[in-house]
Image (cartoon, rainbow over all chains, first blue to last red):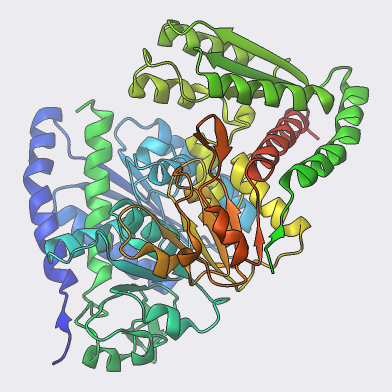
Length: 286
Length: 286
């Protein structure tokens, strides 16, 4: 029996539909829409696609979305000045600086820019204080991708508490916050990575397997316990086609599986919009 | 063959001895010792013992330690005012508010007090921004107990990278930061807790097992793979005697084991002193 398909696109549409009346209520109460400012520097084609998708979904949900497009040679201090301006702008509720910044911006400069985003407007949930609050179980704005995964599991009535969860990948954007959110929901959580010996043996203990490595088709059936729930966070471009970290053959082994595209990607965007609304409501004292 | 005894007291003495010349150099350069301020409210007997040990070790290492003893009925806003004063005090490098605060201080008030500690003086490493920086692999001031465990493993030349580590317990003070530090050192890390089914089966996969549950003798030989390294973070008082989370019978199974007392406890204090020096040096721009 092939794995049940966990339709992230449908779930994301439902989550966005839940936001729409709250956005309308905010607009009625405050005379303006919750506002998301996206800073897009450079011309990375994938980033332009992501930002367009975020912008479109935001507008459809009733948010005001402003995209600040900057040329690839924009100096770091100019990007920083823009962030500082947005921090002070009372009409801005959420700030998203699209990663990666152009090659001309060093890693250290990138860090300064991301650190400059006011925690109250940090809708990506990447700032040190928001990450710390996530660890402490009191996140206000949590990272969008792992939050979206939890929301999907809940919607699909897939239990988390007491289950064995394995997260492959330890990035700050997905792997680590995913592990922390699963832990907060009482899963027993294992984080593995490129230095883990015998990854398939570790992964195949999971009731719930999250693949966030960024390598196309890396997770083969040998990684998957029969019947396990498999969440594919990977977005890899292979010959112009988007493919996940999970090999297609896994569909014959897993009990449930998110597709790529149409799985985690749309959920990430829905959670970004939700974070923007949460930030707007919090700033308005609601 | 009984487990090798990992002598935390000896390691802590060695770490403190390494600090002494750095403390002396700071004093020579700045005309004052690095200064640790400890806020001790109420009359919890264990807290008084801990604070006395911290004070003694600090003074022996050349730090200036001021203990602010407050009665158990001190209102939360008075404790908060003290923290605010210490934040502004240029002669204070590190602030430690001994937990728990008295019963008259609510959980929410406690959180406000701990959140008020300036991150640059947060020598316990518990503030949201320091915790977030720990997740991001750029901690300035990391929690003392897990940092002490890593320092002990290094001193004992026990490898971490590529090993299977299991942490039992998910507190913010030990379990979670311990898991993050082990992960940063390339272990494959599993965090388990009271909701984990069949804990002994999960724990006994570990090459490196950290017990931080706070239940006397909870970890029996059934939890331990023969030859595993077992770190006992528990400090439990049973009939007036200090005992760990690890049952004495584990000594017959483990390859190496920290005792209680004389294991992790002294390391925690040594790392607190180190954090105070680090904070002082950072504040002095070194």
